[in-house]
Length: 393
Image 1 (tube, rainbow, N blue to C red):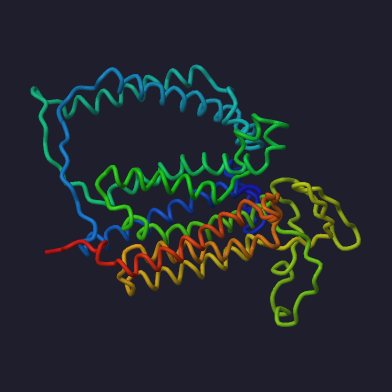
Image 2 (tube, rainbow, N blue to C red; image 1 turned 180 degrees about the horizontal axis):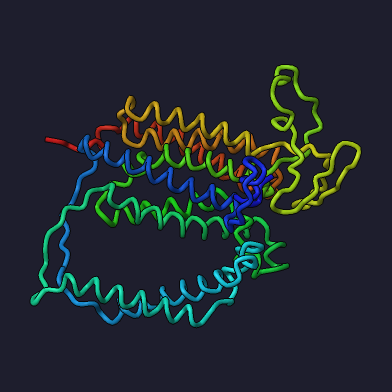
């Protein structure tokens, strides 16, 4: 397992460079970049089809730097300088606990002052270079793909917030036991929470900027699945606790040519520091009110999800140009995503909700709702496709 990128470099290449980048966080960042790239490509394609259109906006140019701009930039500079100089002076402390270091109040006041002056002056000079004697309004063309940067930031911020909210709703005992850690740590993230809150936020922003939501949803669907696959690579490599239940089944003959870890894995050296035992040395865990006995034999569920998500991405990417029905690709994404997550939940560890005599995890409930909504969407958009295809004449 590789809790940090440094661990991976040391083990794979023999390079010992102390880098403060957690493996899981690195792959999450990479997944956002992949999603943004694919999203932009699809928005450009849909603009070429005439399904999404550029719009003209008015922008005021030639103004001097306002007080709020200078103060805002100085504040950002202070925070960055406050942390950066402290990191430079105490790099080993930061590498040993990047998250704790960054989220703490620890910093260097002199560095903060230097950063504040530097950022504030930089904004002032930038505005002075473009200042006009008489500021004026000009018209600019804003194309759909040019909004991807903003939408990615919105997805990242709202997605992490949603992931934390859904995880804490599912694990109220952890929240009550240590509220600060539960709310501020980057462990304990619900994929579906991030997807739902992030997705709603992005679509709201898109509609506010004149884009038709269904075409935006179709455009982002393949990228979402590719990002999911990449994110699960981070889960597998770091050992972030998303492994499955103990696998007590013998490895099938047809898998004999594959490494044993693809069937059952011990996750030695995982980022959580948990010992899952080994054959003959069982370790008992109580997770979500259930007791499990591991002997180094957890189902490698993140690995399975990486494979399934990659296959779903391939299907969506292959069909996106062949099926010219607005809403179909996003509906298919919801359907396949629901199927994938529902079945992987059968070997994962999550607390059950009990209602009307039914026991199901939060993810299973959402997966079923996604599957049903996806099927309904496929039917509806296929029947009513003419309503959603813009007139290009």
